Amino acid sequence: EMTLRSTRSTVTFSNPFTLPGYPGDLPAGDYEVLVEEELLQGLSFDAYRRTATYLTVRGKGARAGLSEMRVTSERDLKEALSRDAATTETNNHSDAALSPQEDLK
Image (tube, rainbow, N blue to C red; front, side):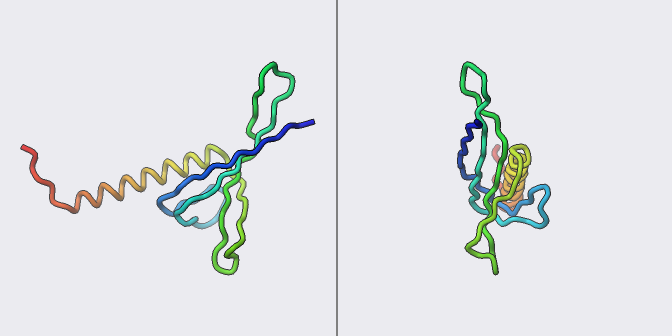
């Protein structure tokens, strides 16, 4: 029989972001990630293999109060998070560029 486990974590996006396979932007905010893994049988130690990764997306408008489990992958999620961090950094730098910097001589 397959032994499954699931772990939940939260990721935070500071900017609207996109996920491959889904149209449109998702809003910035905290999202719950659900990872499902199965126990690999026949090993002398416990090892799990990731079988699925879901991002919980809260509905808005007419779908407010409903949440949807969107299938994604660890790679897609990591790429979205690193794009988000890069966007935040770019925005912060452009803010800094607008304020006069004192000459550090």
